[in-house]
Image (cartoon, rainbow, N blue to C red; front, side):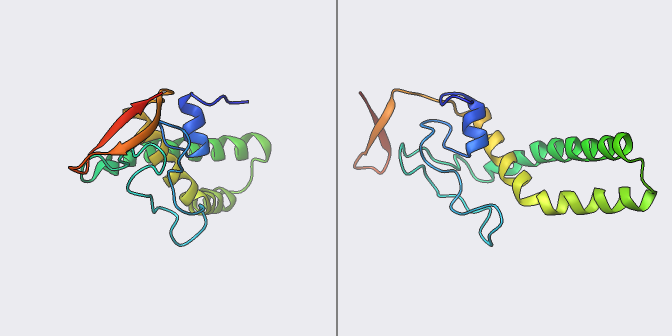
Length: 138
């Protein structure tokens, strides 16, 4: 079992990297709004997009995930079945298309965890008069 407080917990459960309580995404993976994220964590107020086009770098993570997926599909088919070329073609197109929402969300979760880490002391926040957020540690 993966314990709270690790990056892998935040990535697999798609939780806020700082508090690991708030959700990174508004809806499920196979809905129309599968990529929509709240602007801030509802628990610790972490800004999910700290700069414009922040998630552009997640494309590189997504690329690495797709390469791993293609390699896994190829090796699994080759070792287990050794099918005709048409089966490889269908599998290499079909499986990544079906898993695209999952890999895109996963790449964003991985990418934001590169920049923010779990802070167990960050429990409560209050808004300042200028709109910024100041932490209150327990």
